[in-house]
Image: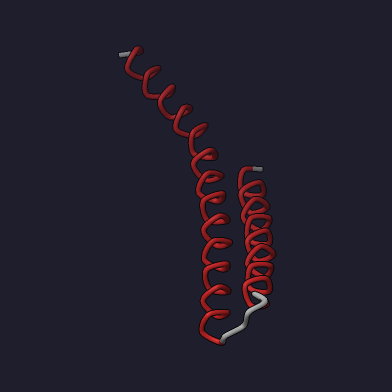
Length: 84
């Protein structure tokens, strides 16, 4: 019976250790996806509005990068405050 309890406790510890890694991986994927979609939106606006110097691509991509960084910082602060 004691072996079962020890096994259960070890599985809970491993699950708790794995959880932050999954959260940080999902944050990285979210950041990449935000920047990618922002650049696609900017490229689409350039084509749709006939802008040849890719102004919309640059502006929207830059906004997407800032938004992604802001989102990552906010989520990391939330995770670290929650764990403390």
